[in-house]
Amino acid sequence: MVKELKLYKVARAYLRQAEARLEDAKEAFPKRNYPYTVRLSQECVELSLKAVLKAVGIEYPKIHDVSDVMLLVEDRFPSWFREEIGFLIESSKILVKKREISLYGGEESFLTPEEVINARDAEDAVKRADKTYHLCERLVAEIERKQESEDN
Image: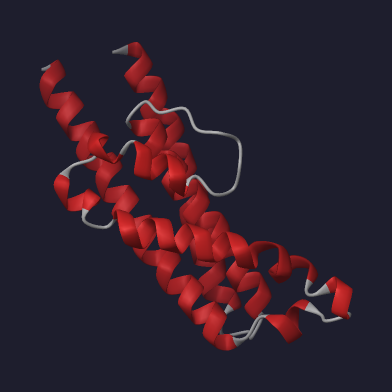
């Protein structure tokens, strides 16, 4: 039980950080700071997925895209969450690919991040981050409630 509590504590901390990035991404979008919106959205997705992996006791590699791990352990998740695994994996992969260019642009071509990332990219990134965060937050809350009821 002590280990589970520590895992939930870490998962909750990751979700707080993910939520902060999501809020900041939503604020950056109307300011037309599209590269920053994408970057923050990617971080939100990464932290959200790592939170659910922690909550189910999975150690993951210290990389930005943990979608392959999600697929390997999908049987640890309830059916409603497994139905969204395809979306979660796709979102992680898409946003990780845009992570570097949202920060540095196309350096070899001397393109700025603003020339590489557009409003459509940013809007899609925020939508993916928002859905991912809320799915992961719901799952962690559900796991915590289940654990509490088993402990009582």
